[in-house]
Image (cartoon, rainbow, N blue to C red; front, side, top):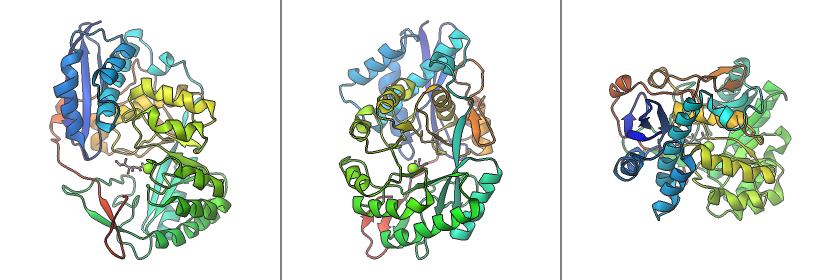
Length: 403
Ligand code: CS2
Ligand code: MG
């Protein structure tokens, strides 16, 4: 089956998405997500200018060979732009292969390992009371796992606290907006938040929290220790992960489980953290970590060390990524949890999908392929509009910090 055509579709139904569509001489098509939040056009160009010309005429069934060609063949390996582009090709080709087999993708990945995929939703509030109310609302919607984030007194804007209730979207300005940050205020506030949340929601729900790369290792150790009484499922990205040794220090001080990896793009970013058992959950997902093919390698390495998966699933990962991730989640043995931030109605309409949510669980659906498509006519009505993620500055003196 030959690849006859491939195109990149950039659209913005509420937020920007980059989608790759591959066509074959047998009439089968496949789609892959290529969205890299805030740097969308870099991946669109990488694909259109450098990848697509090499795809035409290749056998669409040779997924692994094409993956290796794009990875080794570029000479310049890894990095988020390259790996997102490779992921889009890989996802589209798995979609085509599963359609050719007449099977939902999870069947090609070994079949179901579980009845459904436990997802966590985002409960956000401007203060503790509002967050507690949101946690209860998510529990009432059936969620078994809930991430809680709250505004911090004295800070203008804090990661995770959005404008809407279901649709938090950080990439909110055509030039980066500036947020303020105080580690001291945050470290005082967060244990109070979880004390109140646990009091209100009890112990039958998993609670998660995203630190979003903001602490130093010793501060992260302190946070993990102070949250131990509230038995969190995980704290995420407690400190930046460029220097992976940093996690050893956190580990020495706390038994709060750690999740890392939403910005990782290959197994090489994960390797030391996993092999040294410095984390409990690996957050890499389909679109930013080389597609289904590469994510399976990461998961297999993680399985050797009892590290489980917790795929990133924010709104900047399109429904195409979500669909593919759900096929991966339901078929991988060391699955932990899947993040699920709902897309807007406009986004859902542009990307018709077979997956669904019920009682805190999601299923990928049973149509052949990964079950997500793009309505190109509708997509054309939502042209690209530049949007950046914010930057962070320390509240007391304006030093640029990690957002
Ligand atoms: C995040 C994201 O979902 C998460 O855990 O950390 O909201 C992240 O900020 C965005 O995906 C950035 O594009
Ligand atoms: Mg995160």
